[in-house]
Image (cartoon, rainbow, N blue to C red):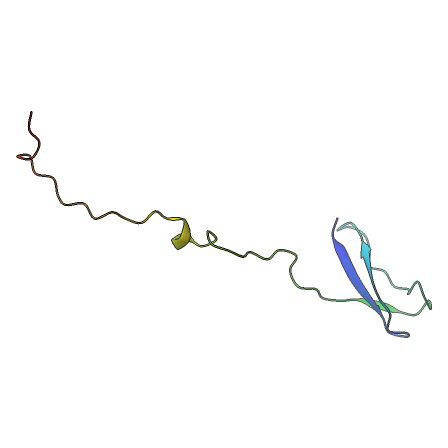
Length: 74
């Protein structure tokens, strides 16, 4: 279940609540019973490090000279 952040318009208190996706947003502040609104939060996942791009996961091509049939003996 995701965590949602709220802020009260009356007293300014900020608080978090864990709610299901289908739950209705809260409307009342637990401190002063004022009106609250949901805050927009940044994404919960941050990808860091190597390996997240297609160029990072590919193996580097090794230069291979064309094989000659004469080099292959027996």
